[in-house]
Picture 1 (spheres, rainbow, N blue to C red):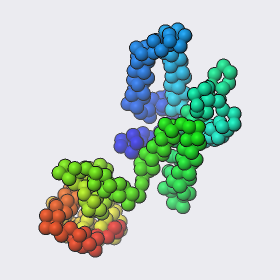
Picture 2 (picture 1 turned 120 degrees about the horizontal axis):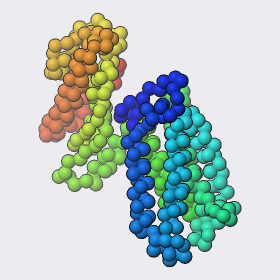
Picture 3 (picture 1 turned 135 degrees about the vertical axis):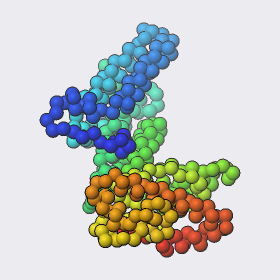
Picture 4 (picture 1 turned 60 degrees about the horizontal axis):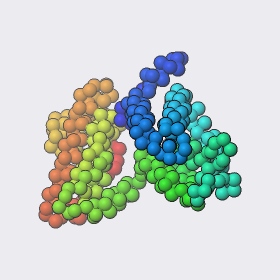
Length: 348
């Protein structure tokens, strides 16, 4: 997510590991993790001594264990962050397979320590809970599958990852460990939506939630989206939107018009001296042709992204103005049909 927002940091060939690690590190994320670890230690110092004494241990028994195992986890995290993505993926796959097999064998070889849930393996001197090792491996494996599904002729990675998720949830529920099962299912759901859930599902969920909200309150949908997404969301009761789509796409040479999507760098725009959108009243459409805008992008002139952004913002604002007007006139259904009749998701 950090790279999606701020962009990836380029990696230099032959650069030593430590300088490369520090230069490419997400320092904010690391700072937050260290802060959370420190807060956990402080809370343990404040709350755990009575429990330790009650159970016959030294006052800071639990704090010491938290510091020891938490410190090991921090070291493992830092070492992992220095590895290449390929190595991390391979280690995660091996770890996931081992933890998955261990989880499946818990009903046979596991123990419940008298707590009514078979979640651990007893080693005599210590105990191991496979689900704790399974979760990070599952996240990496599932993300890898989802990413592969987005490639041309890629495998059905989302379906595979969902099948894995359900099998893990069922095994956790049989222990029973419903908290971990819900956590795994929730984690998969977050990754599924981040990787690009179908807009039909997104809009359907938005419409369902909108029906549960007070009618007199505005409904806000974050991160949406394409012009047709706005139309469908409005038809289901959403009032406001917030998305980088119009400006981000415009900066990269793709704009939306009343006739559909236009990729300005396409050769079809080389000799097109008409406006970007004949139905738009923005400065870009009134003063510049598609051919000139294409020239700006091909030449790497910053004026191109600026003019395209001006049009995209105006187009989205005009689209919302139109929908507000036809809703007041009770003509939204008719307007919606006309919109799709004129709007084509083309790459002109």
